[in-house]
Amino acid sequence: MSKVLVAYFSVSGVTAKVAKELADMEKADLFEIRPEAAYTKEDLDWTNKQSRSTLEMSNPDCRPAVSGCVENMAAYDMVFVGFPIWWGREPSVVDTFLTAYDFGGKKIVPFCTSGGSDIGKTAERIQSLVGDKACVDAGKRLGGQVSEADLKIWTEGLSL
Image (cartoon, rainbow, N blue to C red; front, top):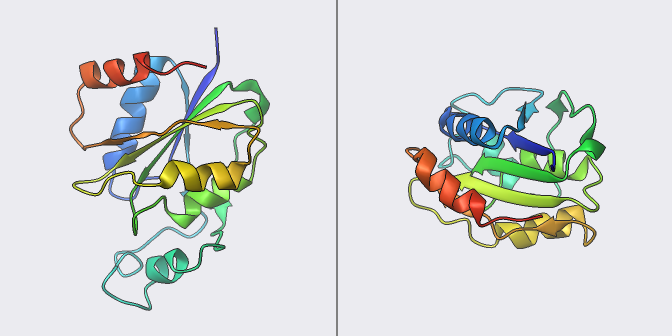
């Protein structure tokens, strides 16, 4: 049986809720990607060109510091990576997580939460971050109110 990790970044709690449901259903370990400095409401003001999130997302090489780490990433075969969509892609803090580990031989399955934005080309971007030794699934956009049945239908279609 393969070992599964659900890693997620969440600010409002929506992605956290979906990640916990997914981890319970998959009997997976759960890891929260936490920025070293938590985001404030002002940091998240996408209309302010000088807000922290706007500055981070405008720099594709930005890697905000994270606190904590996955103790034994080598033990996992499949890693779900969840996040809200920011500026049409995964937040930079997720990039920090993705570039911190060797994902060679693992399947990465991104999922995003968004009220309307699609997952877009996020899988391609993630593939470029983790390298070609990992297999990155196309991923899925999930709304905040996803049923266990919908999660099951989606995950049953995934394979190592």
